[in-house]
Length: 321
Image (cartoon, rainbow, N blue to C red; front, side, top):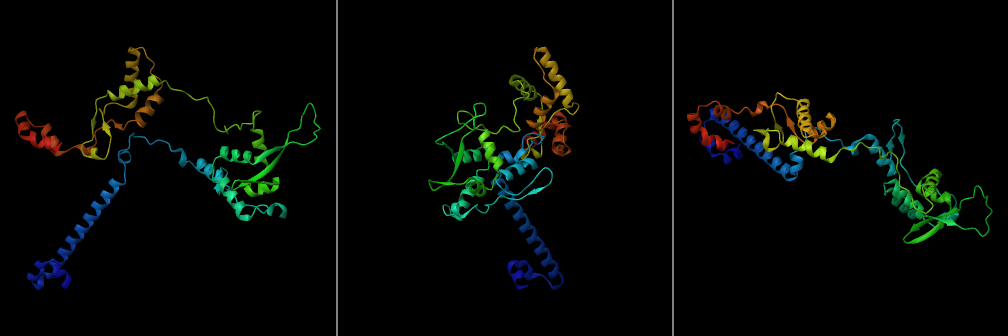
């Protein structure tokens, strides 16, 4: 009670009857000031930590984010040797260093060194880089005498090495596989990927060249046509939005038909509707109606005024805009 009276001298002259009401009124005023100050600070921090591109998102349709797909997340976790859930909803355990094959190889490399090699391999996170890592640890063995079949010549055997601190230590194949926690199939795949010149072909799974290519001139014509459409920006929300508005009597199909007519006059290809739709919705933030929030009283008053009244409202109207 003494603290409140010291902060607000007006309470000293208050009577006992209205003293409690003054205290509540003062306390509510202080609470409103604190909440307003907190909101201002939060807005300032948001603007400082947000780039203009994030504040003003371009395009009314969100673009796909392939990194957030479940299959791509699972692929990244699998390539990093971490636990993931497969398409069949099965949980695969994370990779770890397995027990060595024998004491002979363990005398050459300690458990800490094996863990370092394991981490270096799986931290690569890409199949091509991991296969290149395996190739760097393999060398061909040239025997003194070789008996081969002329029709089906036998391939050379490989020796496996673990590299640590610039030193190459030869180990057996089992020890090498258990250190990286991989299967023999991975070794065979790496061998098959090496061409006759000794180069490793990159992984081409899920890739093809049979893509539909759109003419660059067509894309340029679409953008020039959309940019030429007369439109206005939002009145109230223009500070934090790039959305614009055009005549509400049209749809995207109508705009595309107008584009087709313009292209036919110039004897150019108009392309397909889906191409026009993607460009219209992903690269532009345009709607076909004016929002109700933009029905400002001052703007409506100026719009419905006579020429004499508009002269009187001109200064306030320009300041308002």
